[in-house]
Amino acid sequence: MVRSLHCRCLFAPFSRVSRRATSHVKLVTKALQKMKGKIPEIVGSHILSRVLQTCVKHCSQAERDAVFEELWPHFLTLAYNAYPVHSVKKMLNNTSQKQLAGFISTLRGHVAPLLRHMVGLVFI
Image (spheres, rainbow, N blue to C red):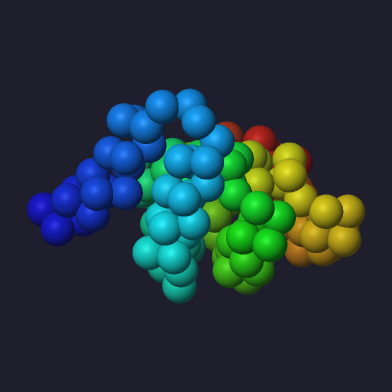
């Protein structure tokens, strides 16, 4: 119950807001501040992973870098779950070359098991 209320509190403003860029920036910053430190747990939830995808889409590069750094140690575990795959994929589309190279280096030695996994295949 508490988790569903938390999900609604974060997701509701995004569904109500008009498409003005200034309102999205404020909401994204506020949502990312609430999620800070809990992003690896949040990305496993269906609704909250969609909120995170929206935040990554509309946030600044500095905020995107902070999300990337928080998820970095958990990439391989997230690769085997359906909801985080889409969030990480969206995040990887907007990363720098250095971060992308770091992500590729974490996949070293794990490509074959990911290729055999239905969800992990999306990462490769």
